[in-house]
Amino acid sequence: MTLPKHCLRMDQLSKAQIETLIDQALSFIDRDAWQIRKNTRCAGRSVGLVFDEASTRTRCSFHMAAHALGAHTIDVPQQTSSAQKGESLIDTLCNLAAMWVDALVVRSADTQWVNQLDALDPRPCVINAGNGADEHPTQALLDALTLVDQLGAVDRLKVVMVGDIKHARTAHSQIKCLQRLGLRDLVLAAPPSLLPDELPEAAAHTTSLAEALVDADVIMTFRMQQERMAEATRQGHLQDAAAYKLTAAHLAMAKPQVRLMHPGPVNWGVELCHSLKGHPASLILKQVGYGVAMRMAILCQSLRGL
Ligand code: NCD
Image 1 (cartoon, rainbow, N blue to C red):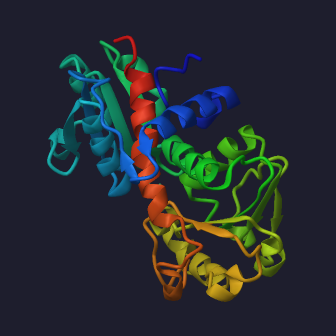
Image 2: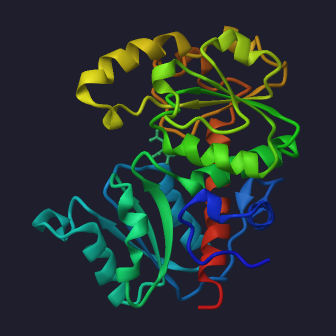
């Protein structure tokens, strides 16, 4: 199964390609020891990380993944790069490409950079680690890996997404990824102001959290993306979202074996109540570990044949 060299948008990947990535990621996990299996498949390759938005999980797990494959990384935080002198993101990427970097992992508040990559020469593999409020495909893929490994197939599950689905790029990619994997029962539970402008086909939506949670297998929660909200609407969004803060009582409305997910960072006390920290239903820190394995699989596929 061949995969695209670049990982830019979820709709580039077929079901079979997503499954190939999941299988490869699983081969990188020693489940008994809960450890990553290091190897040298990408020895000698270079991976540049260009982030102009804050990141802990995504940036660090790409470093971990590249090193676990024998590749080396070049961190280009925009706070200390020539971006400070006015260099554009695309010019920065062109310069790294001119240094023969093999892969670029890029996150930017700008949604459009994914459409401007023709300028890169030579053309490295490019992986989207978040473009504005648009997409975050590697997070969706690691969440799918988490679900498959923890719960088996995705298609029979009922998944409820709660919170700021409008501004969360993780949710936008996740909806496409799970539906591509055959998920039929997807419910978006949010105030109307925090639902996406274009509602996904074949997903239900409701303002009633209690109604949504009945029979849920998985609850996916999302941070209030305050940095993406207009000043004039922010307070209103926060007030609207207050009724969607999850508590242990909400988890009890779902199936007894319900699992709780969140891409992080969690704003405890905002989208999740403090008492859910360390809750047995939570997969939140497990997702982070799966993230290293999935990013190893993505780097392997992107760097193959170079
Ligand atoms: C997310 C992001 O940056 O989009 N975080 C992540 O990559 N794990 C979610 C968020 O910022 O809320």
